[in-house]
Image (cartoon, rainbow, N blue to C red; front, side, top):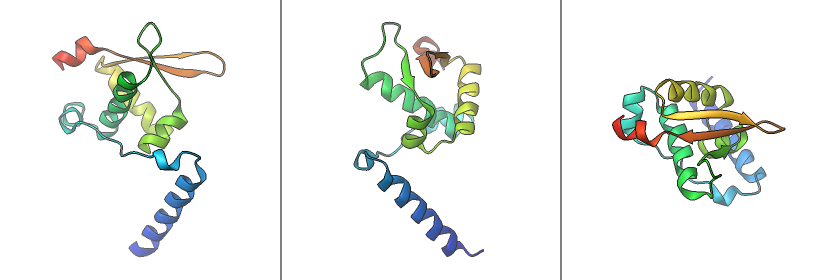
Length: 121
């Protein structure tokens, strides 16, 4: 399989994915801190954490400062698959930077950032 064919398929997939989404104009670049990625030894974990941090700072939070994020919303914003998200969550929980719970029906993920641990990380 040649590279140009792969790039063509990837481009068509991205065009279809973005144009089928109602908020395609709202797509922003997923950002992360490279130093955090080096410390975590994972770019995916840094991207995931930065996404949660961004929403922590931007959204009105619940009284206990938790961020509510779905698998689909994170996948749309970061292109991290469900498996990559789960791996990132495990790594961030192991480093104690992120607490995670499932609440409600249907289950929704609630994340709480540990700023005390982040300050000394």
